[in-house]
Amino acid sequence: MSADEDFEKVLRADLKRSVERLDPTLRARLDAMASAAARRPRPRARPAWQWALPAGGGVVAAALALVFWTGRGGTPVPTTPGADDLALLLNVDNLELLEQMEFYRWLDQQPGVFEDVNAAGAQRS
Amino acid sequence: METNKELEVFLRGVAPRAFRIARLTLREDADALDAVQEAMIRLSNKYSMKAPAEWPPLFYAILRNCIRDEQRSRRSRGVLMSWFERLTGGADDASRVSVEDLVGNPLDEVESDERLRRLETAIQALPARQREAFLLRSVEELDVRDTAFAMGCSTGSVKTHYSRAIQALRETLGEP
Image 1 (cartoon, each protein chain N blue to C red):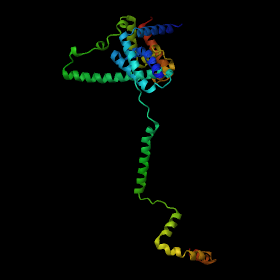
Image 2 (image 1 turned 90 degrees about the vertical axis):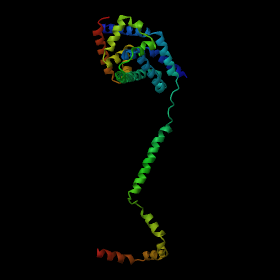
Image 3 (image 1 turned 120 degrees about the vertical axis):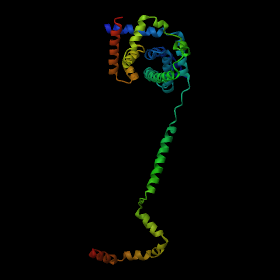
Image 4 (image 1 turned 135 degrees about the vertical axis):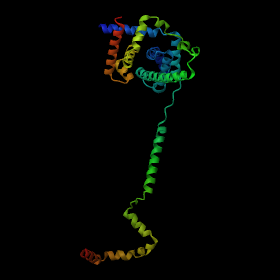
């Protein structure tokens, strides 16, 4: 055993002795503290859904803010061509167009009618 | 319930050594008792469900923080008291309550032993990190890994601090 190890051994023994020689009153007090700490009711862990509440609230608030922000900016909401057609057809002013639908369908099927119009447009450009 | 019993046995076993460690750093019985009590409560509240093998390093990591908290609050108290004494023209000696009055003087017997007294003085004179490493390794007999966890540093640092502490104590105390 080296001199260092001997020295450490003596120090440890001295420290151990100092712990063993603690005053009995103090030791009793430490025991009482240990019992009280071990037996005290522990704070309950929060259920997971309680942790999710603030996060969920934050997400909802962010979504609402986004909706209000985009709505207030006046940026045009893109619409699909199908929706445009439907709106056009449902307009009361265009009821006449609906009534003449059969005519336009017949006209579209006639050969040569639109070919002339397209050819004239191409010459102009 | 089983955990409570196990935890109580652990805390009862560790308390005297924890008190010695806290006492050597804080130098006041009342402050050391406060630190140990707070460490016990925090371990019980937060880590009682951990495996008992994990309790020692966790307890000493908590105790280390509690000792630091005590040191901070003592500094604040010191500032407040000196301000109060200046304001009132000094405290009345009769109104002072000594720590011995509160808890008795449990170390009378220990302090009568000259060698132990010299050892305590030498330990208190060590730099904080060396003292922590030395006390955790020597009093609590934690291994290097658990000491590193309790001190919040690497195992290499623990070895360095511990070796320097031994060297310093040897220089101060001489050969036993």
